[in-house]
Amino acid sequence: MASGAQTGSEYIKHHLTNLTFGKDPSDGIWKIAETAQDAQEMGFYAIHLDSMGWSIALGFIFIMLFSIVGRKATTGVPGGLQNAIEIVIEFIDSNVKDTFSHTNKLIAPMALTAFVWVLLMNLMDLVPVDFIPQIATYIGVHFYGMDPHHVYFKIVPTTDPNVTMGMSLSVFFLAMFFSIKNKGIGGFVGELTLHPFSSKNLLIKIILIPVNLFLEGVSLLAKPISHGLRLFGNLYAGEMIFILIALLPLYVQWTLSVPWAIFHILVIILQAFIFMVLMVVYMNMAHDTGDH
Image 1 (cartoon, one colour):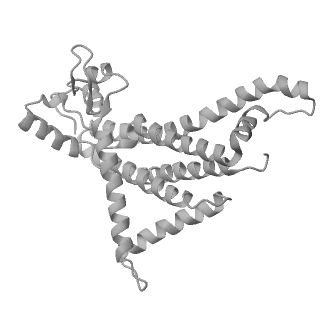
Image 2 (cartoon, rainbow, N blue to C red; image 1 turned 30 degrees about the vertical axis):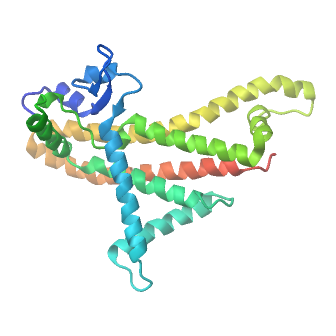
Image 3 (cartoon, one colour; image 1 turned 30 degrees about the horizontal axis):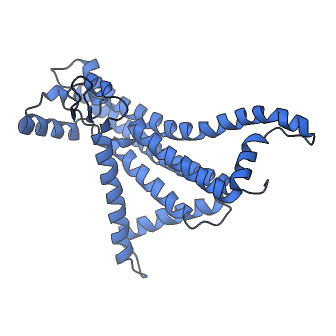
């Protein structure tokens, strides 16, 4: 619920600002931003502590949960948690087999990691928008003497484009690595310069190289951008709707938030699935050597 000391626009801006650590351009001191403007002025090298913290924590939960279940797995009738994890693993394995037509033992574990990690980060969007931020505000005010309106704390890492673009760029560079490894430098360059237009005439082929390079270059660079922004955009929109609902009277909040949360569960799962599938598709393309 919105605080009475804030206007609606201030409440929205507050909830969309990250806990930022960076270098203050005015005095050169590294510190936590006290206002949203301070956070913006810290520039590219500033770190969103909340996004980083929740991403690492949820990744750690994923590793611990799967490792514990893996060590305690039984061949008999599995428990509820083991059964759920086995369903997820079988689901990912089935999709990888259907999408990835080559042999690489890293792809299935990568797909499982991407799906579960993104899913856990997305699930944080279902936590009431004021619950954990109010805890952070209480700690900031009572232990550090901060202004309550200047305590920023976002809990959904996938609503931060730095996180989603970081993951998509990681996938992009892995795809580039495997593409060069499997096709060689010549094959990789040829893929960018000899497609989609080609000719048996050497002169025409040379003339078409800049055109092909432009078209394939745009397509290549668009992949990580669309990969990251698609996830960010959908989760950011979902978070924004929850924030807008929180501005309404309490009796209206429950009327709207519950149906939206139920629908948003589908968005959360679907976006994790799409991110994982696109990663596998890009890896499959990186392993394709039929034209080389």
